[in-house]
Amino acid sequence: MSTLIPSSDQRQRDPSGADRRMWWGLGVLTLPVLLVSMDFSVLYLAIPAITEALDPSAAQQLWILDIYGFLIAGLLITMGNVGDRLGRRRILLAGAALFGVASVIAAFAPTAGVLIAARALMGVGGATLMPSSLSLIANMFPNARDRARAIGVWTAAFAGGSALGPVIGGVLLHHFWWGVVFLINVPVLAVLFIAGPRLVPEYRAPNTTRFDVVGVALSMLGILPLVYAVKTMAADGISGTVVAIGVFGVVMLALFLAHQRRVAAPLLDLALFRNPQFSAAVSVALVGMMALGGMSYLTGVYLQSVRGFDVLTAALAGLPMAVAVAVFSIGASRVVAALGLRAAFVGSVLLAAVGNLGLLALSMSSPLWIYLVFTSIAGIGYGIQFSLVSDVVVGSVPVERSGAASGISETSFELGTALGLALLGSLATLVFRENSDGWTFGDTLGDTMHRALEMGDGGTGLADAARNAYVDGMHAASLASVIALGALAVVLTVVMRERTAADVRQD
Image (tube, rainbow, N blue to C red; front, side, top):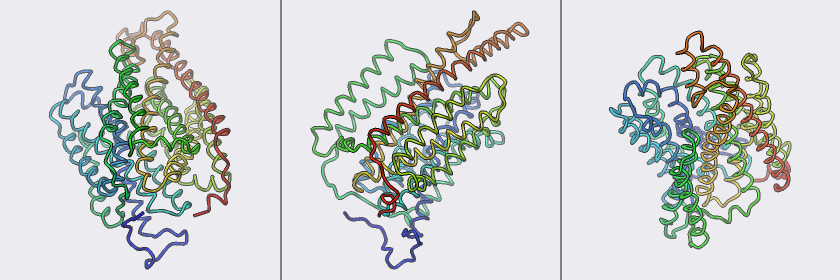
């Protein structure tokens, strides 16, 4: 294995064994991760202003929101492999350039169609940034303890960006026009372009076999229709067309897996899943993000539409959880050193379950501290488990395959988020409609509250019934998350081998 990491034997090394220049390089690598995660959430606050300025149709508005995530989910595995073959830093910088140009186009988009195209380009660029940055950590930090700390910082940036997106967006939109939520990417990417070539080493796997173009096509034909079908069913209900699209995606994924078993240089190395730690980590990413995504979406609506807080206040209420995620992401390696890998994984999943269980105490008049306490408990669990996911995935494969492996884990994160919004959101909506108590509800809480407002004083009963029904739906989704996380904790206890503190300290 050959890397182009600058020689560190002649440079000062810190007591942990990692070159100080590598830690500065890690700081540079967190910048694109922060932006990619922020751009998932920052747009929600800008949609009203975008709708007023560009007048998109309902379908166009859906695509403005979702095309970015669709393409990231569909291309992560592909871009992880491309980085392994062409050079991870090269792909990182190329993706950053595309992301920056697309951000400028989005900021000044004159029509909804141009904005959708710009968001699509941002998704392509974002798909190169995530696996490239994570896989570079594997060869920058060969020491297991240093790598765990570095991945904790990377995870904190990823989770923190998602939580800070609405807060930053709310502040900027209060003072500027909607395009500023895209322009904030440009100065951050400028820092990456200046500092990246100086602080981040290049790495390219010594694998010169032919690239699996058929695998790329089959993976995208599988993932994109499936994610689209799941999200569309959550938003608009089940229809024959959407079911057919979902079935097509499943068939393409089956063909993709069959192809990967036969091809000499597979895009997705199925042998990785024979490693129980790798499989467990991917499962944690999928189920954990499903629970977190569903909780974040449902509680956001709860704070604004049930409790009546404004958007910025609701976003600020999420900061304690964001801080918990960030702090415990960075400190996850110490938890492993003290408890062992299996105990840390199981404990973190159970903490997330406790946090979701506490949401059952939320009501139309419950004090805000209940929300803050239990989401913070969940944040501790999510921070530890997501950091461990990245560490285990990168550490369980040869360094020349870490790009492909990190692409798998990041795809699990994105699919988990989509499933959380779709499955848990659909469950909450189903309970909401079933608990109408004789009232005629709209499709969503927002529609029903608007109808109640139009009724004047006579709509008070409808509004109260809708709020109560929504809380019931949120409780049902929270309980489903608790069950899923509890089942995952049991599985992890059985399939994962214990790892002692001495194992963690080994290089």
